[in-house]
Image 1 (tube, rainbow, N blue to C red):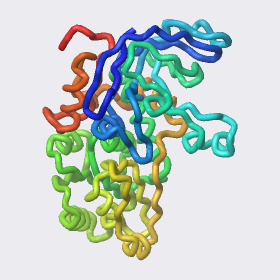
Image 2: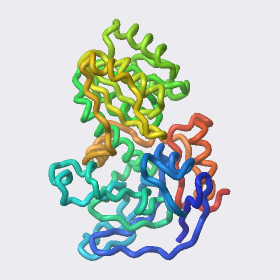
Image 3: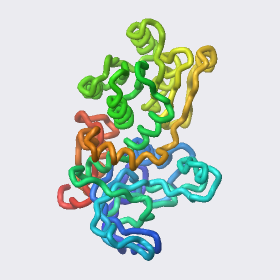
Image 4: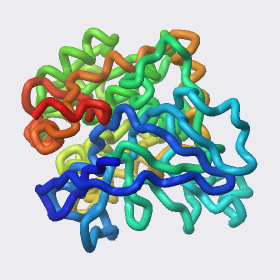
Length: 350
């Protein structure tokens, strides 16, 4: 089988390797589509994300969908041929955090596409069968890939304890910020302000029901416009979805007294900079989001019932040999890209 290996920062190579076989409790999945996540971009550019580094050739990618082609001992054979979304986090299931309902906080978790667990940019992977979720027939593989970032967004929304009638600011309307907006659109009594320096993303946010969009990244201007729109009260809830220095600085400034500030974005320098005085005076509750937490299946249910349409957020699809072009397009925010996919079944287009 073919796999796409990140051999050094900024350099991919295509290699041939034997197809794996599933062990007990596992399934062999033929990967069809893989999404490019912000964390993948960190790995592509620098070989690192936070305190995790790649020390040699490695396969990245964790947002993926595919079809089960074989199962190991103890797995229901009816799973074969089913189309599935994939939960990328493999928690231990035994530690205090796992048994308390927080498997996303498991200190021994293995994560698809982070060392030592090779990722999804290959034709086949083996994965625990219990972490595969069947997807409805009407949802294409691109939409199925989007379920993973949607699950992260749903976990963030759950942490925010949203109530009808609240005001919300979303800082950053890339993939995760747009997923947050998509979920919040299910509430009919929220006033949502979206902030982003990239104009085409805000056009999308307006079409999705944002009350106001602010096209800047400067903290003082963001604060001025938010407080003007909200009659100087600040927002009840703020979602930081970019991980950028300016949005991290802005998150507490645009929040109102007693607000919830939910931090989803990952800063490439592993720094979070904000005014502790502002946060303290306002009595803010800051929540940091660690991936998703048992939210993949609820997102599938929303898609199955057509409350959300995950595939609408996919803007670009590249063939497997075009992987470098895909990552460069995402990294440059070029051509109106929001979510770019790699088609792991297309090895013909260069």
